[in-house]
Every structure is written in structure tokens, then in C-alpha cells.
Amino acid sequence: MNMLYYINLLMPYFILIVIGVITPFITRKTIVFGVHVPKDFLNDKEIQGIKTLYIINFLTVSLVFMILVVIRMKNINFAVGGIFVEVIIMFAMYMKAHHEIAALKSKREWSKGKKEVAVVDIDFRKEKIVVSPLWFLLPAAIVILTLAVGIYMYPNIPQRIPVHFNFRGEADSFADKSILSVFSICIVQTVMTALMFFSYKMIELAKQQIDPSDPEISKEKNLRFRRIWSGFVVFASIIINAMLMVTAFIVYGVGGSWQNNMAIFSLLMVLVITIVVIVISIKTGQGGERIKIGHENEKLTSVDRDDDKYWKGGLIYYNPDDPALFVEKRFGVGWTFNFARPTAWLFILAIILIILVTIAIK
Image 1 (cartoon, rainbow, N blue to C red):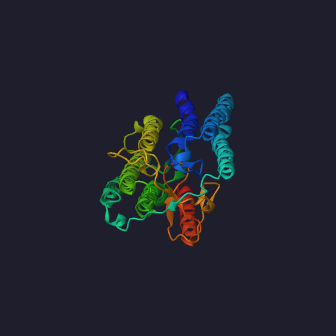
Image 2 (image 1 turned 180 degrees about the vertical axis):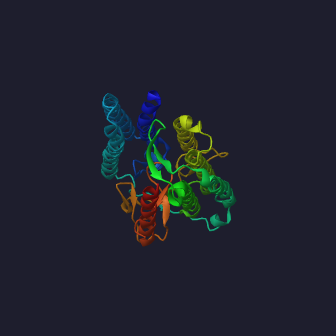
Image 3 (image 1 turned 90 degrees about the vertical axis):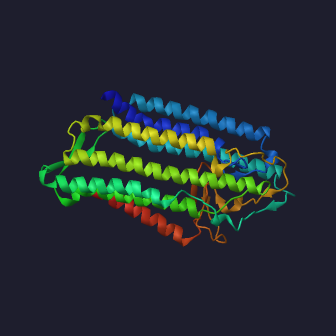
């Protein structure tokens, strides 16, 4: 069980290191550390050098810090808090590379004299953009099953029930039996399902981004990309709800021996989700750019619109003139908000409040 404890604590570090290493290579080819670079300059030796140096610096600092974490592993506060330090390390390395690429672009004047084009397909919304929303009936069914079993078992549930489990899978916090404490996990399941459905709608409604040099192929790639990731959102929702259901059954007293395997089960499910995310990210790339579809046009006829001025640090999109609420990220795979839209801040505030309330209930 001690080995499982160490694995649970170290796994977030390994995941962050893998993400930090692969992210520069799965973003769109014309976006290098959040900076738009025309296609004909992508093989520039200085750009490749900055990428290589980023990998070396990131891995060196991360591994040295991870050794320090292992040495002080018995201090759980240090081990858990170190995860945030690792995030800061990745952010710092990214910002260093971002400023180097931006300075190089300004010095070389890569966009000077380039014909910039923005392509919009008016029939895009008529296509099948995401998987059917009916798939969300599956995670909803898990919530209903969890609730039904809880209602059936409620009279036989002890007066003191576990409400939190540590990294070893052991119950380390208890509460008096009440409707709120017994069914809190069902509430968490419902909230998580709602947040995942929000992510699903975000994928569906996000602004289209089409490569002007090969619009038809680019459009098809983007559609496949959205369908794949919307399917993953449903898959992740099912896995998360299943994990929470098992936890709820332990609280209800169903399958007494399950608690001994709870930590292993949770670890395996997290690993499954993580591996699937990494594999899909590598296979699709941002916007579906790594998806292979027939014969692609390699000839450079135009340059996608350079909107660096709207991206703060290559991470935060702020464009008051853009009506889109959701746009593709510039570093990594997925979508982000247009922070110039007031609705974006309302969404973020609502999500934060929901998470805080959920944590308080749990």
C-alpha cells in the first residue's frame, strides 16, 4: 500500500512532465509557443533551437525538482504543493520560449509582405460537428443508479460514514449520517456531468479555424477533431461518474471489500483517462492538424491571418471585435475563452462557484 501511496503522489508530476514535453509538437504547426509563424519559416534553425532548448531546460529543472520531491515525499503537504510548483516551472519555460520566438519574428519580419487570408465556411454549422448529445444519457444513468442504490440502502447506512479517502484509499474523514452527507457524491456526479456537458457544447460552438491554403481538407480535419474530442468528453464523464459511484457504494456499505481496492481502481481510471488524452492529442494535434486525410496541398498560396496582437502571452485571447466566445488554444490542444466577452467571465465565475460549492458539500 505504501508503494501505491507514492505512485499516487508522483503520478501528477509524470503527467505534467509528459504534457510539457509533447505540447510544443501537438499545437498547430504555424503556432510556435503562442506566436504565429508563416509556414515557409517553420524549419528555421533558430526556431528549432528554441524548441530544443525548451525541452532540455524543462526536463532538467523538472527532474531535479522531482528528485527533491521524492526525498521529501513523507511530507505530504510538500509533495502535493509541489504539483503547483511544477505547473509554474512549465509556465516559466513556456514564457521564456514565447518571448524568444516573438523577438525573433519581430527581428526577421516574417509576416512582412505576406497576403493574409481568413477563411469562413458558411455551411460549417450544417455539418455533424460533435457526437450525439444522447450519449450523455449514459453518465446520467450512472448518476440515477447511484442515487437509487443510496435511497434503497439509506435505512441500513451507519450513523457515521466516510466522506473522504486519502492517497492510500483509506477513509480519513467521517461525518454524521444525513441526506446531504449520504447523497453528496450524487450531487458531485451531477455537477461533474453538467461541467462535462458544458465542455461538449464548447467544442460544438467554438469558432472555426480553417487553413486558407487547403480549406476543404482543413475543414474535414477540424470536424473530425471536434467529433473525436466530444466523444472523449462523454467517455471521461462515464469514467468519472463510475469512479464516484464506486466511492458512493463504499459509503452505502455495498461491497465491503471494495474499499481495499478503491485506491487501485481510482489510479487505474485516472491512468486510462490520461493515456487516452495523450494518445488522442498526439494523433490529432490541435484543430486536427495531425490527422491524415487523402492528398494534402503542400503548396503555400496564402498565409492565415496573423492575430498575435489579440493573444496576451500567447495564452489569453482578448479581442473585443470578435463575437466568438470560444476559440482554439494556441498552446496545447483544446479551446479557451475570448476574454473580451463579458459572458466568458460569467461562465468562469459560475464554474468557480460550482466547484467551491461542490468541494464544500463533499
